[in-house]
Image 1: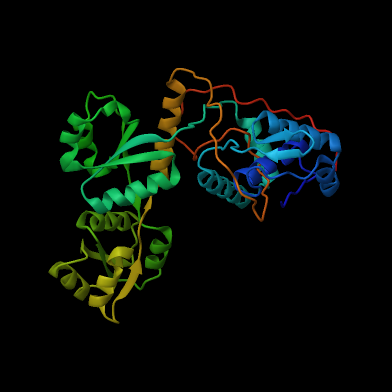
Image 2: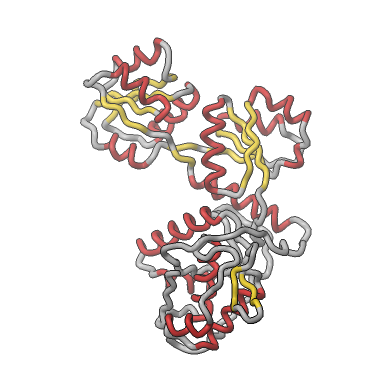
Length: 372
């Protein structure tokens, strides 16, 4: 275990050690049923008071992460609790820490600031929820579903726009916590789901900033085309590039990465922007004189924030229920135990849209048994 205690941090030593041990257990640094070092060993190794370590162990026992076995010591529980979707938490926290550093805040500054401004503490969305995704083509469905499931605790029910009327009649619409679709389909999806109590959110997929930066470096008058596996995807990517307003390029057109249209487009451009799925076909036609840029688009983070805010708001509006007794999962021993300054409850992605509904956040116990 790679544990670190910072005696100069404003975060109490007890909290530092508790959160690090939880992270180690959740991420697999200590296997199920494996013994932890003794209280004396941990205190000696970290250079802190044994009473502090004893309180940390008691905290972990109370929360179900470890158990004491008479005459043998303290062991990781056979099925320790898990804060859902650890990869989402880890990515969110790393991104937040990097953004804070960019404006001159240390990780400690960030942790203390979060605790000081978190007067509204919405209930965490603990379970995976079902979301309806409506698009006009299978590639678009796969793209948006992958993006949503990579960022949020959702299971995406993918439905083609042409099938939505039938699917909505056959299935219980109430099981969908929200419906998402691209802007161009928003009126139609809202019409088909009208009266079913399913809020609809519009999504926008943008060209990657790196692609726009590369395009901005091209000579004035450069002719640019766009290709993708589906024509709808190509037009969406072309629209995203057009919105950037780059004065040095001329957008010639967009097409699917098959058929005669692609051959005609390649002959008319200097640069072609395409998806990974279309790259091999495009390069085969483009030849050495046409530059090929790969761009698989990225979902506009504002759409993810809006959906996250909606899920949190719905979660707060639901009848209060006792938190799950223990969502269980095991964890392995990591090579780098990272300090987790956030609280015990999980918080989902950065929702900027209005969030209603809150519950009392867990009380922050700042007692700590000795300096390092």
